[in-house]
Image (cartoon, rainbow, N blue to C red):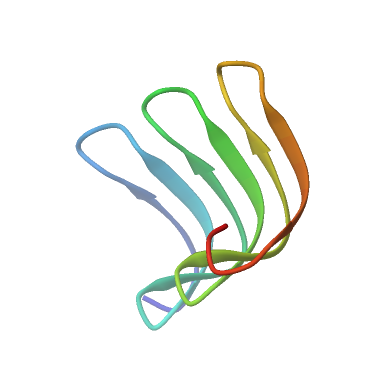
Length: 69
């Protein structure tokens, strides 16, 4: 998969955004089954660059990510 698209897993997770050779890449939006979500930059299937992580417990992180952390 390369380009832009939406992928829905059977467990309810959703990813919408860029793909490069089957991995999340570029700008994208994740929503997990517990209600947490992420919008931002991805590279090689991981959060890399600027992004926003919203957690249902009330935590919000706005800033830089490196290798999914």
